[in-house]
Length: 59
Image (cartoon, rainbow, N blue to C red; front, top):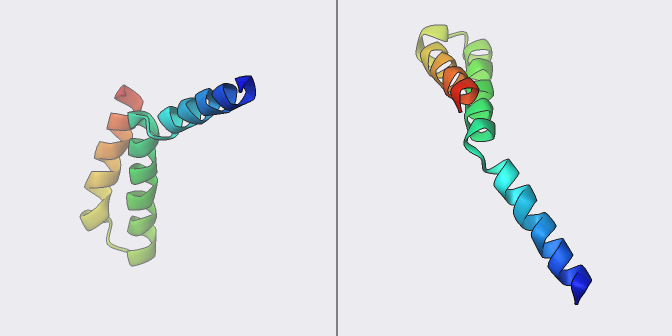
């Protein structure tokens, strides 16, 4: 019973870390930055990559 509660707590901590704002914004910044490179259209994806980068740093 104790192990089940401990695993549940670890799972909640992992999910809260994965779905924190900084991680999500950093992921979006990376995706938009890679979109700049892949599509060769930085004017389309660049501003959003910069915005999400700033938001990931600010928190």
